[in-house]
Length: 343
Ligand code: EAX
Image (cartoon, rainbow, N blue to C red):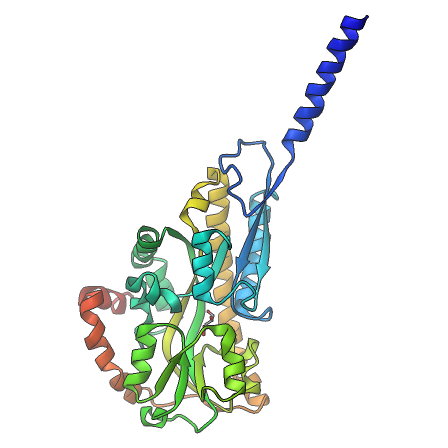
């Protein structure tokens, strides 16, 4: 009887231990990436971005969260951190490399400091329209740029998303021609091409991380800035800026990125779920940008901004030609031509 009881107790103990071993959750994934199928660990992914919770980024990431949690049968749980809660874009990208952030939705703005080759897409007036940009980024050229990101920084681009076409705002005067920018302190992203373009047009470019921008405009540290309409509306820049000119001078793509090591630590089915959710949510986010872009101008006028909707763009294009001369060697004229000639 004693022997039977001892045998029964040990079997019970094994069962209890096995039951406890099955269920555990880990922060930020890469727990034992190679988690065996059926070993249902929940992986929480923190994703950061700089824009408000009313922004196109937030809308896109909410869709990403839905899709990824669905495609991974709940194994992935996504926590979204808007408003630069995890830092500016450059800071968050560094956070990816030290593991303090799991995913970042960032524009190509800070890429001058990480993979300068990627900033070829930041050349002024390079893209005819959003469709042209999508064709280039979702095609071979876009994939080659992601390959450079992986090679140079160990960061994996999951998909190309969108910030939009950037326009200039300021508090001093209406901008109708490049000369009107003369002497204006314009905040730019920490991007060499963006700074060179505004310098070439006679402005005084001031690089600054996004979280610092609204207070800098409010206190007059800078006269103006440049951003897509969905950013100007969702960040309430109409409260601190008077004039908007629809220059559409830069097309600004965004990237949803993760560290390569973290991505590789996940089993294949979870890697596929990540890539699929990123692509589908990215396509959705681009539609959100188009809608906010369309509806935003009326809203900004309503909020009291003076909007120049159709400035003559040719003088602006001419004014930035020196930027092409300066960078065509760095990027190679062939690459620039293949982007321009993409149908
Ligand atoms: O990517 O810094 C900027 O102006 C960007 O539009 C913002 O960080 C979103």
